[in-house]
Image 1 (cartoon, helix red, strand yellow):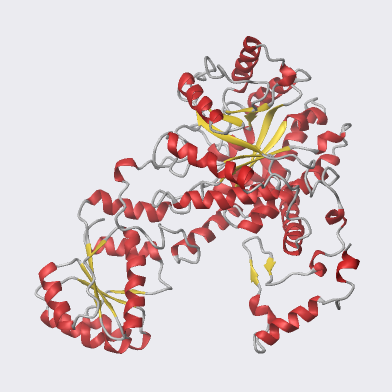
Image 2 (cartoon, rainbow, N blue to C red):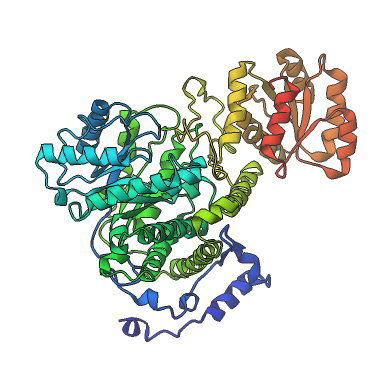
Length: 617
């Protein structure tokens, strides 16, 4: 087919494409267009067949080892919805509402708490357990949940072998987040063994053991780290349970992997493809007897780390692109978090919007009609291969330390994740990474004080002792949000005045810059009056008495305008300028300019200083 279509055209080599780009760049080196991703992968502006190499994986078909193309062809993903269980009958009501609204699977999340589990009385009423997959999440009472599930199935008359779902027990995930096991290590792992053995052949489609790779994502991991550490945890389970007498085929049947999907669109697509290619390579080393042991279930959830309290409707857009990445990458099931889940408890409208993202992608955009639609895209194929190599190196480094538990005990995993997290936080602070509505383009009219809910992971309990150092889990926007909440709670409402003058284009650009920067602290702005004279500005300032006055205009005029303000104002506001005119910075400081607002500033540090200047903190 390819030869027939393109035989009349001269083949174009990668070198020819590069030469053309250099020509368009008027001689600038091609390397100027290459940037490095957080995973350490060089991202080029153009890719050709030569970038994909002669890898045999790219020629495989869906359902063929190493499953780069997917575990099977023509199978759409499952639309899931999570429900937090605080009261069984209320959770059941939400579940039935979700199913009527288009959800195809349910996830019941039980808080990790040492008190007796809430149980399942009434939880599964009027739910067709033969057709609706149900996933249970709890790390303290897996056997209690398993017993409740068997009771519910018996009451409904559904055979065990017809049920699909999971009891997502993850002792290593609990250890990673909380720093210790809920019981002794031996007893905690034994809980998993008991459920695994009892489910046996009775539940051929029940997963009782989970790997929460989303933990690493929420701790700042790169895509390569997320895959590498997920592989290490999965391999640790294979090692532990086989040593304790459980056949490898039984372990893999019970395993599923849960990933968070972030906003780096193409990298996230490659993440799912790379993981799906690497996991069977690990399982193969354990010599399973059944070919299905190489296949696992991959569940995706839209990430928490880039979600914001402020401007929460932006979270809908973020969740949409994340959902597309998970689907195009081949996730078996997907849950979209409601956009305002960190602000308030369950809300019907928010849950409805979250479901509709997937419904539109499946039934209107028809994302379910093609298996591995990214196949053959040179960029994606190249990135998948490079990402798999990076992740494999991370997995091998963990194994060299003696496996996941030993590496976690040494702190090397925590240190690696902290490095990645701190890189993100630094980029957020300097606005190299943008969170719209939080560190850029804030909505100054927004106020969330009445609904703030900072315990976004519901980590209300953890063991008193710490066997290992827990990973640092946080959303990237938390520091910025904390600053703005400080302003809201103070009820002082600091006012900023923009003293604009000079060239209109420079004035306008600098005024907008200050609004987008200082507005992130929740300060309000006096009504702008573009084009008025400096004298009129002074009159307005004396009348309004704002807390801050920021000069926005031509650099060379700053000393003159600053002197005018110092001479004619009847009070002393905090003064600053937009930009950083290095040649006159010393002079301006001597005149009383305290702040320089420019692109290189550390935003949280600046905003804290501004809050201190008006006694907010």
